[in-house]
Length: 306
Length: 308
View (cartoon, rainbow over the protein chains, first blue to last red):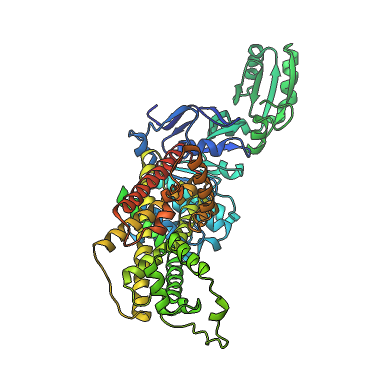
């Protein structure tokens, strides 16, 4: 438990007749970059709003175990960029940040300039925020989230509107913040490939429910190319696989085995299983990237699990 | 915490353009009104001489007074056509207006009763509070639990301060008007003026709180500003009169009873330097009650609601 910064327990939010978040249980480790994956309307923003203190849960609870302080103190150590950046378009980027800085008791103008430089807006600090491009607004939103040097950053689709170079810069910035300043980050994104480059842990959410929670390592394992064997007798199949010298395999459940090495020897493996009179329901090579895996898990690909 | 929120809100207002523009508009409008009442011979335009005005003032302005004089002329069988001169004297527009020669305090009282301060305050509040919802500003400020109440209080304080600023600039305009267009500059900075200034400021703050409350509840700039315009333009007075008549009949109240006397804007328009104690106390009670009601109502709603 002590490794976790935030733990939620059956967190639920119901808007009139819509259940936006349904008994959500997530476990965010201190120092991790936690990726929240889900389709539009899956409930990502609602979960983020609740743990940022912007929305009250209908039921359930969450605890900032890692902060070891009261709920109010914990909230003050959070920086959040949820939905669109909250920016006054009639004010300059500098003024937008200064308003938040003053509310946090930060009067130093150098602090604001440093933040603008960090997010790559130092050249346009005088420009009115309404005239910023979508990417610049997003950067300003990130700068606003960083005011007060938070220990926990909640970022809802932070790379929306950024060009490829901007995405790479922001990714680098998040990595830097995570590694150098030890900031724990909760991030949601539709661009799963980008998310997979920085996230250390994931939760896949669908219809307000957490479908799967796993580490980056576990997820990569699931997304690796593999021979998937479905058999009615896993116990008998294992000695055959061992006998053939396969070392990198895992028993997924009482019907499924995944073999990760020597994929080209699938025919040999199939023959040996047949020789041993082991009933094989199906055998084949499966490969998927994170996006494909996500689609399978959320049931978007017909016939896959949900 | 309160000081930090206050600084942040003060900075936000200082970076907005509307507070400055509204002050400039207020000063221009009041200056024009003062010009009308100080430099335009309104009585002359109505064909009345100074003596006529004095006579009317001596006679009194009560309904009975008018009725008596009307009936007297009617019974005497006057032929009004006899009084019409064949050659009309040229109309003189500029001259000594009704407020010419009055003290700054009296001019100021007239300016406040015009309710332009209230109208412009409503526009300011609509923009100031409405901006919070249109930009999602509160999402940035990590406002939750106790902090939300504190921030709400800070914003009400800012509204109160801005209404004071408007009030002061009204007085400055009255002073300039007297200096530029009046016979002399007599401040009349006495007890009655100080009491009038405080009472009207409290009424203005209370009005601001009502508009802020509407903006908070609806999360809309337009709704707050529209309510402000309706209240300050006296559009509700007809409804108030009808409601008063109904109450008079149903509850057997006196014919003098008027619901409008218990509204903030009516009090702001009618209270003056010479109002008696009863009138002033009523205005004060109205200011406090409406302020408290609007404050508590919006606080209850804001507390319950998620931050948008």
